[in-house]
Length: 364
Image (cartoon, rainbow, N blue to C red; front, side, top):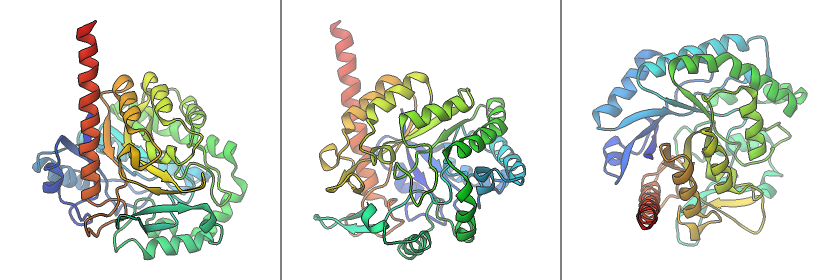
């Protein structure tokens, strides 16, 4: 297992590489060029600059997140071939600098969604929060404006302004796209990029829908074991994998997250994991993001880490969305302190599981 930390770059992150390196057990970062619009080529020059900076800090960068898929690809428009070619070029460029896993999603229009980016908790911390009842009073335009107004001046992955500037127009185009059509367009995308991945030794890891159900009537296909089985069958390749986000899948109470990890771990189809916890609040469509501690949320982090240990122990892991604690101000979900605490907790679970497994082996 390689423990990593998401890093947005020295000009865009409140957390420094020096701070990340000082977290116990940290091996590297999951990287991101947050200024790149969906569909643009990630050039060798900018990739090299980013990764050289990470290496100079004594950290690795073998996973890149949010190489966003252009809406024309998801919609199946005639212009998609141009953007798929750009994606192939980006894959090759990233591979040249040691990247082995690319995280992406296939969510139409809106990426992850919360109705509050800083909901106060009883202990004085704040965390990201979702309530379907609150969403019911908001239009997509309203939620985009609210998110932009409450991000503390930081960009948010999946909420880039240029991606959402034609929101009403794009939403209209999706009126004729159902889940079946979205999967058809998804297959075309995978057929276009996965041969390049196989050539370069890079795996694509699809992040789940967040939250794990349809919103605003838009089709969504990646929020359950059944959904991911369909995605993997679209193009049968070891490079077609899952970015298993425990919080995104855990938002849907019907998902048994440790079981899903075991299912895809045994298949060798987990490219990386985002490990976090959440707490449902009186409804299966209302939750806040809690600390990583099992007892603070609904997810059993011990069983999650045990499933990883037993089925995909050589994967990449990072703590995901943390609370804002101790007066920290930063990008919602991506402060230093609570995520660093999460790393220590997850590493502690891993050590205990590892020692117990080795002790059992010695006894036998």
